Image 1: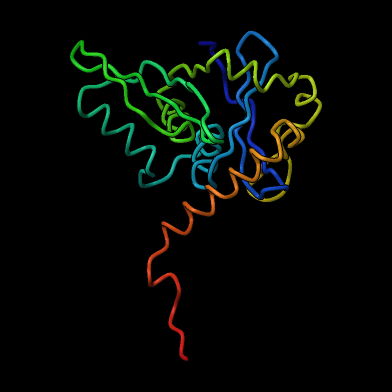
Image 2 (image 1 turned 180 degrees about the vertical axis):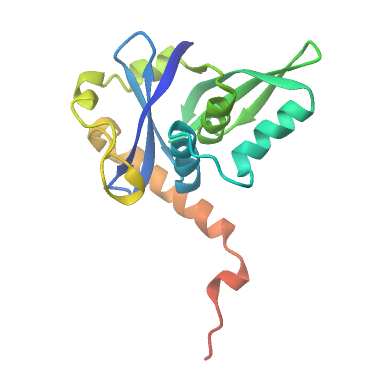
Length: 187
């Protein structure tokens, strides 16, 4: 595992999805992870030091872990399968080590709130071996929707992976719909 940090957030215009760019702490390799808008906003708010009057979901997760006597030691982005990234949160409570399976986007948002290290599999960094200099040539922040910066070229993933990611995103969206989301229609 290699320590990484959140280099920046972006909007992938080809899929209209947000991307968090992780960069290895003492190197130039990057790892782009496509995430949802709420997670991107949560990560951006934490990076920008925005504090809300009421706790948001990731603030609540931090408060729950702390209230239950736990600490977050690290977040580990472990693998990608069929275009889906997997992560683990490594916690400790009363001397007991606890590993929790979690989405990387949520794990990263919570790790930032604990100031806990974020680690990525060396294999993942090697797979997405895009030099950070290309990314560094872009400004850190730009004006526009949510202040997000476009990510590096989307050609770092194959067309099949992009299509699979889009299909999975649509499935998640459709599964989350409730009858009241459709409004009232008359026939």
